Each structure stands twice: as C-alpha cells, then as structure tokens.
Length: 162
Image 1 (cartoon, rainbow, N blue to C red):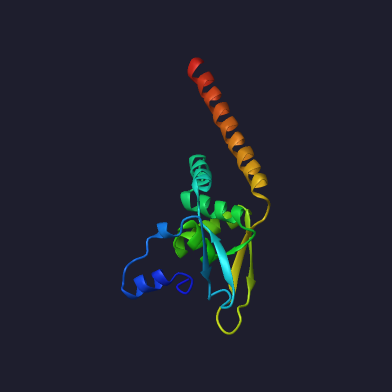
Image 2: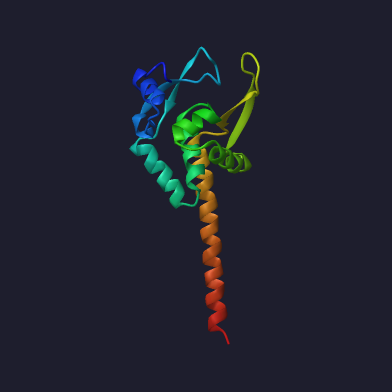
C-alpha cells in the first residue's frame, strides 16, 4: 500500500494518521499477508452499498454483519483482512460477524497456504447469490410477522371473552 501511494508513506513516516476517507471507492493495495507479489483490488462502500447496509440493519441484522454480507456480495471471495479494509471494520468485528454468517449458512470458508511460513489464510465467500439469501431473510421475516399477528389475534380473543 505504501509503495502505491508515496504520499501515504511520507505521512506514516511523519506519524500522521491516514483518514479512511482517503480510500474513496476503490483502492489498490499490496496485501503481503496474502501474496507478496500480487496486488488486490479492495472495494470500499459507496452510497449504494451504504444504503444496502442500512436496509439490512433496519430489518434486524447487526451493522457489522450487514457490512460483511454486503462486502462479500460485492466480491467473489475475500480474506478477513480484505473484509476489514473494505468494510471499515476491525478484525474482532469481522470475526464476530463471520460467526453469525457461517451459523446462518450464508458464508463458507476455505483455507489456503501462503508461500513460505506462517498460518494459513481463510478465504470467505457467500454460499449462495445475495438475492437468494435476501429471499430467505424475507421468508423468515414474513413468518415472524405472521406469528406476531396470530399472537395479537389470540390476545384480542382472550381479552374480549369473560
């Protein structure tokens, strides 16, 4: 990353923090943790993706789960580090969100070995296309609403009978 943008390198050397807003829509960075000789494109959220996250949050998903889901919907697959950078989350937030997404069977992962030493890298991807997962969320929400309406009707019946 620092080699791609000399101004960032200079700012870091002087101890100045780099605002995340610097990475507007797409940023090319060097991910030496994944492959030292390969650059990867990291998608950052624009207005459309932010709206997607906001709607998912309004229907009941946590903000971090929503961000990770949207990021993975934008990409074929991604490492935890790529998700951190693209969704503007910290590593623990990505891990907690992943537990939820894997638990819902919306995300799967595989491990790949890096060249040289070190731990393997997990690569995540959606198990199905995003529209199918959204359909599943819709079905669950409709079931919840039907259950609530049924309970309200039962409550109304109980309150009117002596």
